[in-house]
Image (cartoon, rainbow, N blue to C red; front, side, top):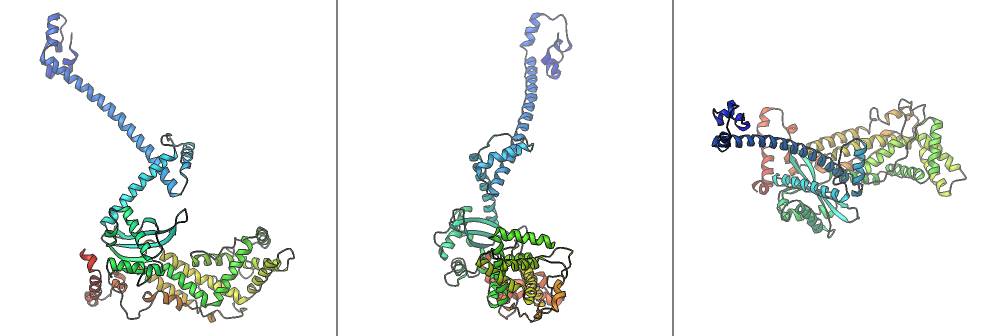
Length: 509
């Protein structure tokens, strides 16, 4: 006879008959052993070991269950975030679940409804808002960028971004969108503060004190020196705040001013709009254009509109479509979209089935397109706006810094000025050299008023002797440092002193 508990823990039981085994044990001996202290210790130790095994088994099961639950929740939160990001109705949440199920994803139907989707999106927003608050709190200096906007109900709002340095690089972060109580400068400023208050604790004014720069479009409500938003900011926080007019917007204004002063640009703009209007509002004319293109072996593209909020990219795209020529084809012998549109306009001008309005429009387009000078100028303008569109896209990059903007602007000015004397190598006008001898005018005689664009950017492209904070900041640009050691020792001392004086208040704060 053996004792299972004592046998499992011989050190606690000691040497006795219930461990070594005995076939002639009496009943009283067994009862006495059951009541002994060593036997009870062995019993407790045995039960404890059994409980540990059970705890481990339960723990493993719980861990496995937790991992599966977390995995399922991650998938559901990702689906909810996708619905919010793509502005999909919350009622489509169950359909997205069904799509994952159809694609073989093992996803359970828990939380498979629009209410839970809204809750998940709210939780995601809370986490993102908290992360944004921490970034704002930890940042020493901020730049604010604002612009007018409308929400889904067409309510006038102000959208607010901040620009700060993160891991040594400038980044733009959306703060929020706030409805305007009033459209004047104080209303815009209050909406901007409310956007900060929605993210950070307090009224948002303490965060506004971290501002060193303010960016917006050139509207007087934003940039007015007396009653604009920037004027109120400077009065509240300090005169050190630097107002910066949105550079892509300034470029757009420069080109629009140029369009008014250069009649040829206005003619091209109006003609491209008439061509787009002809084919956009008439399915019959569009079918005829495509049919004519197939007969001539031209891959006709849909004419593009020149009107839009971003004027430079719109007109550049419209010109590229208008002058589209198939790859690998000879411009001198193979027709292009320009010739297809011209032939179709000749057909519309002579057709009796068209309305008087369409016939008159076609005659006007045909008359302009038959001019060789107009054709040459369109090719020149496409090269020009290609350079300006590239500059516009560069100025819109989130990672843009002032030295890059200045450098790109100077490069663009040099390339555009070079177009006065010779076509861009490999550009649209360069491929039109075969027709240059037949042109009614000389390309070099097209006096394009680029000085209008230069004047819009002030000190970025010219040096008038007046120093600004932007000039002083050049001392922080390694590319502007002198090469010789002697000049480098004293370079930038005055600029750093000027910057320290201007930003003394935020630096001490």
